[in-house]
Length: 452
Image 1 (cartoon, rainbow, N blue to C red):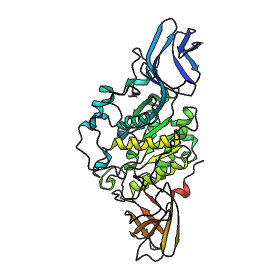
Image 2: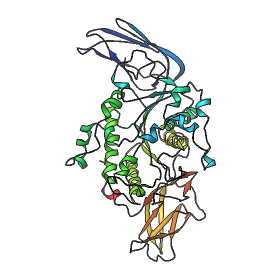
Image 3: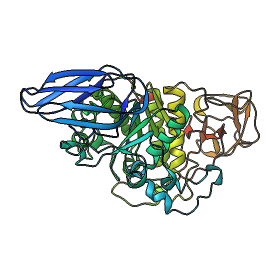
């Protein structure tokens, strides 16, 4: 059996389920699970596959029997919701690190430092991919684990807290597959030939080792049915001062992964990279104070693709010198809000305000937003405004009649507005305790990024 099929796993409910493995050429194989029995014969390469009819949700552990010339029993299997989480170090950031960090400054967000110790929910199962895990058959059939003890200590904090929020709200089993590598760019996670399908890259050489991790850490998962993806990456590409090219790379990632799993509408929820002093770093490529806001802008463009969602992290850092801010439990929770609202159709607040449109009249800017709940407010900080000379100054902003009205005394004819357009954001524009995404109305990407 492949490593991803093992005891303790969660199988995705309500979808046909692939069960596959390896045998002698022409060997008869039978799979029995949840009242179903399916037979097949291995092909000329010794590969075999059966497809189980969609399974009903089950919190009760069940056993799967695979019989050929030998017999394999996979035990303690649940049926529920399965998600793949991927990216670089902020996604890989392990639960054990939470026990060692000082108490964060934002007390409103809590501090679950003892979560590893008290985690005993056997309805959450985890599978941690490393660079060798998936490419060889499994002989012990214990690659999945209950989310507790040593297995949990090594697992993605964002992935776990996402699962915890989903499991608590829906009351069903959740399986998380984490496939992430610290310091990785986006290109290695994409099949190399996928770039040729995107017009933007037709006449470009794509760097950063395209496809390097895909055959070993993504492709072997594609037969395993899932509900959707979580993605937390971008820092490495930000250091390279990427803008619109990153938006197209994310587009290729999303489209190619959906195609690989043979479901073109799989949810893809992702994380805005956290504030950091990129402009103070010295690397191969010069960066400045606009580098990170422009990458945020590139990330935001993917919201124009169907079944995507993005969480802001502008308020989830205690120091702009920390590339790995600690509030991973809140990142996981905010991702779960998107999934609960959009994938599981719960009536909950799931996003802070997202800029939609602007009009200028009477010396003021009138802005429309998606997910703006307030009808009126006191002063909001973090907005800047510019006249025809293009020089931005701090602005006054209030919510009135479900619009944000922005102005400055010295700007008589405003032409552009920005919010939190800095790698050191301090804005306080929220909706139901969820922060607004940074934006600029003078945005070139929305005019040039092609979602088709």
